Image (cartoon, rainbow, N blue to C red):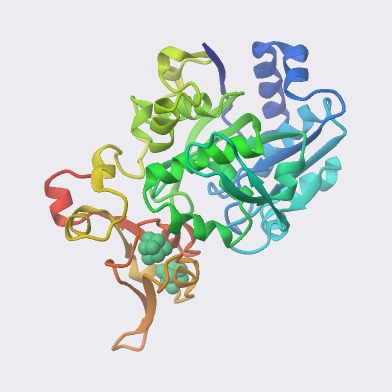
Length: 386
Ligand code: SF4
Ligand code: SF4
C-alpha cells in the first residue's frame, strides 16, 4: 500500500504551507522518513513547473509562495538546495524571475540552475525509450523533488507529478519528442521512463489554485485548496485526478500506462491517503481538459481519414490572437502543420493543415495569448468521442 498525503491549504501563505508540509512529512514518518528521501549530505534539486513566462500567481506555474513553503522545510535537511526547469520557450531563469521564484530563491540561498547543458544517458529495461539526452543538472543531483502544478493538459488530459519532469528535456528538444511519440500512450510511457532516468524521489504538488479548462497554459484558475505529497508519483497523480473528477484514474493515459506496466500505485485500493479525505476536497464543478476515455483508440498517427474525422484538433480563438507566430515556431512537425497567412482584411493569422497535425497541442500549450482551444469534430461530437 503506497502512502500519499492530502492536505487542505486554502491560501498561498508561506507559513501555512510550511506548516502543512511539515505535518505531511510527520504523517509519513517524520525525520526518519525524510532522511530516507534526503540522505545526509545530499544535494537536492527542486523541479517546479516553469512552463512559460507568466507573472506572479499565474495558475500555469508552481506558485512562488508554494515554493517558499517547501524551501523552508527542506532547508532543514540539506545545505545544497537548488531549483531548475527548462521552459517550452525562453530562459528558465527569466521565467523564474517573472514568476517571483527567483526572488524567493535568492532570499533563502537556493541556487537557480538553468537546464542548458544536456548529457546522454542509456536506460536499461525501458518501457519505451532507452536513449536519452537529459539536462545535466537533473541527472547529476543526488535527489530530485518535483513540485508540479495541478493542471489540465490538452494532449495528456492532466499534468502533475509524472509529466512535470518533461522539463528535464532541454529547450527545443522537447518538440522532437512529440514528433517521435505522437500517440499519447507512447508519450506517457516515455514520461515514465524519463522519471526513471532522473530518479524523481518525491513529489509535493501545488493544488492550492489549480488550472481547469484550456490548460496547461490558458485555462482558468480553480481554488482547490489542496497539497498532495508522496514518494510515488503515480499515487500522487492518482489522488490529484480523483480530486478533479476522474473517478477512475486510469482514464488518464500516464496513469493507465503506469498501472498496466506496474510502474507505480495508481488504483485507489493500492493507495492509502493520509490527512484529508478525497471526498472532502473533491471539486464537483472542475472543468476538465475534456473527458478522457476513448480518444486513444485512434492509433499511432493521426494521418488517415478516420482519425482526421474523429480526432480533436487545435482551433483559433480569433479575437485573442496577437499574430505572434509562436504556434508556428513551436510546432514540431516538418513541414509545419500550422503557418501564418494574411487574410483579406490584412490580419496575419495561423492556419492549420490538419492532415499534417499530430495533435500534440504544443501550439495550444505555448500560445502566449490563450488564443488556441481544442475543438472536437462534428462526427466526433455525434459519436461522443472525447
Ligand atoms: S494563435 Fe497564439 S501563438 Fe499563434 S499567432 Fe496567435 S497569439 Fe500567437
Ligand atoms: S499544429 Fe499544433 S497540435 Fe498540430 S502538430 Fe503542430 S503544434 Fe502539434
